[in-house]
Amino acid sequence: MARSASATAIDPAMVLSHKFPEVASAYDERDVALYALGVGACNADAADEKELQLVYRRDGQSSIKVLPTFISVLNAKTSDGFYMDVPRLYYDPALLLHGQQYIEIYRPIPSRANVANKIKIAGLHDQRKAAILEVETLTCLEGSGEVLCMNRSTIYLRGAGGFSNSSQPFSYATYPSNEVSDVTFPDSTPFAVYEDRTQKSQALLCGLSGYFHPVHSDPIFAQAAGYVALATSYNSSSVPVLPTFVSLFPNKNSNGLGFVDVPGLK
Image 1 (cartoon, helix red, strand yellow):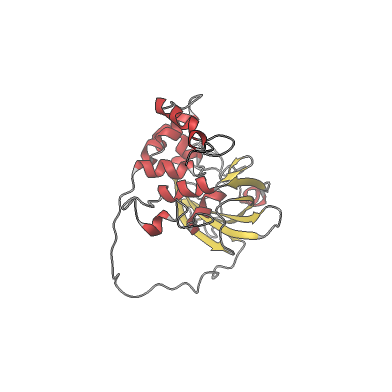
Image 2 (tube, one colour):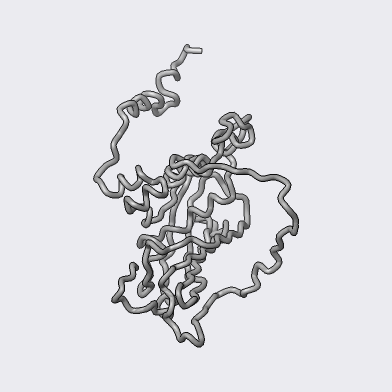
């Protein structure tokens, strides 16, 4: 919910009591491969054997490999829209920052699946000049109910703080503050440094993989994030189509590979 100068402050009780409906969704190898390309797979070397396994079935692979971070695209959308669409959560979308992304994976990630997402507000903190919102998503496999992973996103909302007593700033979380206290970082200098440049085409590919963020549908934000084509699709009835797209039509039929799948043609 966007915040205006005359809007009232965040209502923590209403935000924390908000119940998200369970969301069913599905993804397949196309989504997984687009995500891998979007974050740079095969960008430096299109023939890299290890990275090709992320976008192509190599040497008898039954399925392509899945980058663990792919599951981070599963938690942004609810059946009602976006997980930031919470009653009495006032903020300015232009001042929204994505902070920490914490992920726990409980089993190998399949390259295609039907899943159910269970979303909840895991934390809300008043930092006086800003508010911090923590959203937790538990992703389960449909049918078996087996838990696949847990995503927790920390969202920093500049200008949205000050909704509680200044002497006792409001802070609430459903998990212990020391939950990840066993995480340590090496006290040494890096043995290698790698630099890369993200291209706008990569952001578009990542978006096509299933990532959903309505802030990026605004043309100004979309251009900055590389979502130019996606912004066009949000703000018009259709996306312009390259004329050569029709060359894909004869390549496949109900029996197989189309015009090259002919009896007697070896």
